[in-house]
Length: 174
Image (cartoon, rainbow, N blue to C red):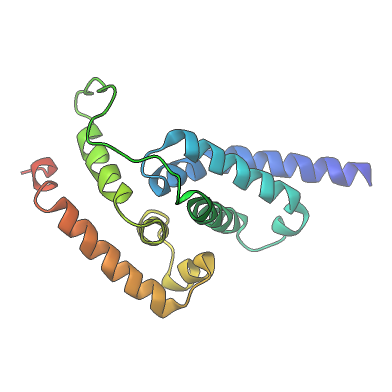
């Protein structure tokens, strides 16, 4: 029986090592670029997956399960902390050095726009367009109906278009 536990622990470690980077990138998008909160959410997600690894390892797609746990942890965090959260400002404390040939300004513009969406709208956009999940998978992750996800997608994309306006045109290649 000890060998089985050891094998499960090893399988979990391999899974966590393989998925942690992807979960972190998704968490950064969900949090609007708050890397500290993103790290906390990934740790919470990996902890929850570890506790249920015996069952999770037997499902068809453990990565999708972990992404669902991450999204729900993010939404729960937003609900718990919505009344006393920090407020973003237009002024950054430090401006990073621009990378040559990089897409840093584009990423910052997109993160800023994502940060202005509501938590659920941001979760829908990240799951549908970053994670490339179907409407049904997104609905399952958010514990919502498919119709609600479709409606939220349309509204969130319209809000992003309104927020971004023509600002993305300056980053487009001629």
